[in-house]
Length: 166
Ligand code: FES
Image 1 (cartoon, rainbow, N blue to C red):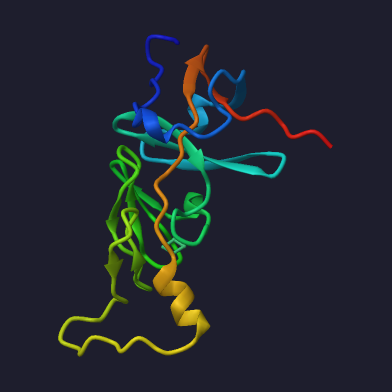
Image 2: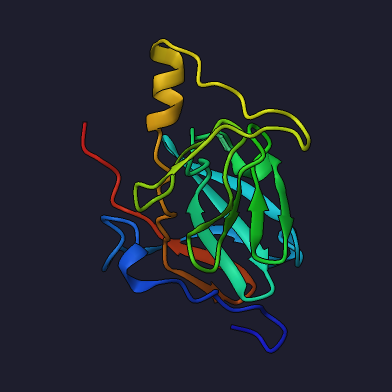
């Protein structure tokens, strides 16, 4: 790591991505391409990785919203909080937790229910019957899974699970 290079952001140890423990680090992107406050998608095979340069350091996680899998890389980053472009959910990359539930409502990671969003001054929306509404209600926010990061000679390296055979 050079004197000016950012470092990896710490993440909760129990949220390390399955298969990434002990994996080889792979070169993903030069640090100059990820200035502070920016995000980038980098793909390897069918794995889309979100790289985010937060005030806490560089984060690598899946480029899939913890709600319904929209690409967070085209959302916005404010400090450590990433906002999803699809249902306005906001999620803290430092902790893995939601800070604003998606407008569709649904379940927090611990299973508590959050109703569909209602504009100020309006009566709460009645949950529509049917499978689609039920699917939205039962969709649980999943906390991020993190890939270990290191910065070597100006390059961001990430430990990803091995490529599946076949
Ligand atoms: S897919 Fe991101 S908030 Fe719904």
